[in-house]
Length: 401
Image (cartoon, rainbow, N blue to C red; front, side, top):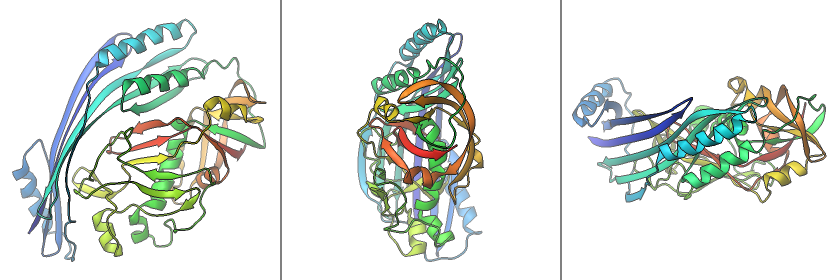
């Protein structure tokens, strides 16, 4: 019998920014076990460090598994620690003071700031001996006023997060509501509005499981999918990654994987099981959600360009900057087609913001990437509770309204 034991402990220390600062703390801990016996795969999870209970439950699931020739992947031995400390109450105090300043301009600011520290380990009879830890800062902010929108962002340090928040707040001075532009125009997509559109289609095209379950719908190597300005990678060893790891949740060595290189598709992401099904090798992208493993990114990144936000805006003759969208849940990840409400959008004429507006926008995610005319040089990083992150710059593209 082969056995794999995964342990996770996550600690969150945070402060809620309402009328008063309200601190909170949460700890999550679980143990997951996978077993392989006579080709049958069983897995289960137990809260806390109860390995014996997880093992018992995993043995129960073996009875319901079909017999296959799958074996646990050959693991690696590695250690890392990128953790840090931060006084979240002091940080929240800074944001609260900023909220008071904004209040004088009839702009409200509320939300949460958190320090998240994760430690996980993987041990298996196939050689995995992994122990790693990393920290990240995370903010979820609601900006109210004439131009309301949300900020969801993370950073490996408070300094990086602070400058990011200030950059977004610098955009909310739009003087009045104006009519939206019509026809073929340029749009600058803020990362907080781009990631709900981009994530699903990219995961669909670049996960090995798509190649296994829907052959022909995955990205084909050499296929032109985007503008030459667009490069997308998964890089968990990027120092700024919100999921900084040297091995995946199966204990397989993790590294940089290029998905799109200058607009051209290069490769897929594989965990050990889907790779085995397809006769491929794991790319170190086994991501755990509870007791289950799926093939996904650690730190999906659209590589930054060389333009500042001001330069991206100044290059727009007629168009808008998208600060928020609604209705992204209607997106079709298999095709990339979407129909959303852009709210708010800052209307731009001859490189200057003239006001704000709201309107419906229809299009295709791969069309946005193919029509890209500029890429910002600063990244906004977003952390998901599923255990992976996405890092995006501002992106300028052509659309039809």
